[in-house]
Image (cartoon, rainbow, N blue to C red):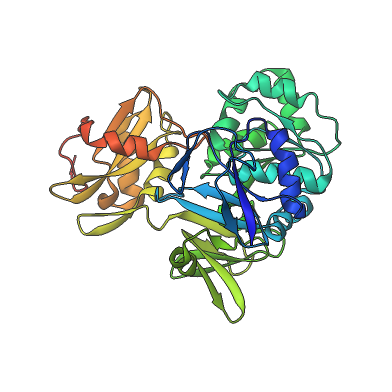
Length: 403
């Protein structure tokens, strides 16, 4: 066993030094957390912790980093990642992208995507540049990116950050900076086809990534597994294997046994994502979360599938689709969108035509803005907590309206 140090990274480059020691085995394993965001054995963590005032926790010796994440269900879990898994992910990424290079860090380092930017920098022996925390400013991004020095340049973003950069790309200086990146990795949530098409039209190289904390970050790039990652479909759900897999969950043997299984000597991670793998090309398509399904009028409805249709309509590109209880139908989809642009009747007709009447949104709720997590993902829990108070009805609530 080795000790686990819980740390609130004040400055990512200071954390980088501790991470290098954790990977080499000369320092304790690390659990990076957001200030005030974690309780360890009843102790609230709300400041930078050192080896003397950090709670004494222990993990298996091969574990270098533990990532605290709520996943899609909101249930907290602590994912244990070994040095080998983290470095395997970095090596596979380097090969897939065309070589090691310099990274611009634009994501928090208590998320796996931020940690992996630092791990890739350590593996490449380059110094990452760090975007200041807070509101994502395209001009601040441009200014920092202009100071990068290595021939190969990379960054990792979430879709909302990419969208803001493309929205500001009428600035020639910013567009030149974006084109100078060897690759811009985008993951953390589904990315709309319209967004990648805009990037392609501007000659900005975007790489769509798929993975999770349990796979040491992205292990599928543009639908293709990288490194020794293998993907299969079992009962409609994606399972992953390879060197990038986590050791399991800290102090949660039951969850570990449920999510990580061994079959014929091969260890697989059950992602909980619905998906497909093309038999000829081995191209991976992610269809949505298996647990993001409601029963409406006796039929299963994937809210992720509804959201994909909704995003194809002008004014609804950033909309969120949630499930709400309904006295008649059991559950119904509800569309939450920021702003007042977009034709609702056309949207609803399109969902029905694509997915059937059971998927028909019961109402559209317009809000001032969509709340975001620190990772840049929509805060679905915050939206769901208010859904019962929102009432912008479109006819009768339910999937079988005939209007």
